[in-house]
Amino acid sequence: MRASAIIRIIVWSLVALALTAVLVQGLTTGFSFGGIQVFGSFSYADSEQYLVGSNQIDMKEISEIEINWGAGDVQIIPYEGNEVIFREQASRVLLEEDMMRFCLRNGKLTIQFCAPKRGFRIFA
Image (tube, rainbow, N blue to C red; front, side, top):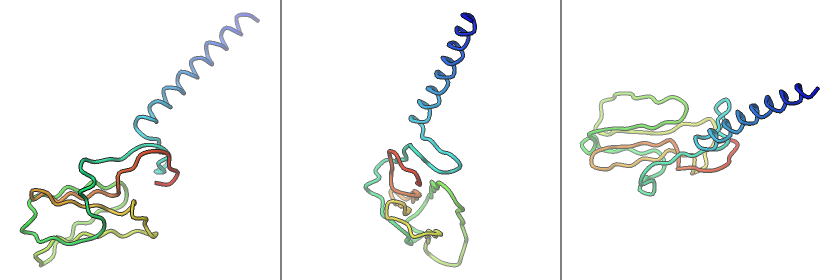
């Protein structure tokens, strides 16, 4: 009986250690289950300089485009025009914090999929 109790203690200690490792990993990188973000963060430099929503910018002002998109499709469609037009479509009404952001700096147009976020949230 004594040997089986020791084995159980060792096994449950290993299980507790493994679960602690999963918890630490999730807290540092963000939990995501089936695409539903439960805890984590998303940030980018100079986020206060980004503007919110769809827009269009003269092509002459842009030499590079960077798109950081979290989920869904990104379509790049050429057309006969002088502007780069970007817009977001969603199946639901988006809160401002969930709307795309863009910034044009030194000829580089950067598009982010949402405002920076940190902390506990069920549906992000």
